[in-house]
Image (cartoon, rainbow, N blue to C red; front, side, top):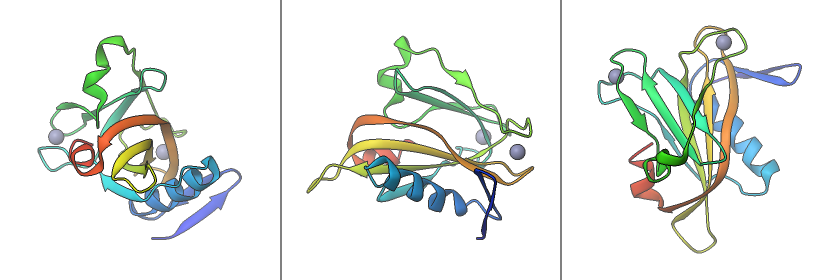
Length: 146
Ligand SMILES: [Zn+2]
Ligand SMILES: [Zn+2]
């Protein structure tokens, strides 16, 4: 785990570095993330193509190994209204490791804000790719679906 800053971008030696980048971002956003989870496909792979629609509050990850598409967190509730767009790294790679961080309501275990961070295994760029206010309900159930 080593984060290096180049210009305005962060580069990390491992996927755990995503968490540190989400943490810094979320603190500046005013809703610090306190719970984190790595996205793992049912096949065990941790590399995905990421699609999201921040306005609708929908994120989908498509596994690059087996092709399984998964709506993240509570996205399935809003997927009908969404028009998710694909993300790619600055280097052009679309295969990304994804970690989610969430901020909770005070004195509660309910999700208040969702942050989706990614790391590119090609160039090691780490960033927060999407974030939105998310009435996601109890954090344990929410995180089980990231
Ligand atoms: Zn898979
Ligand atoms: Zn890259």
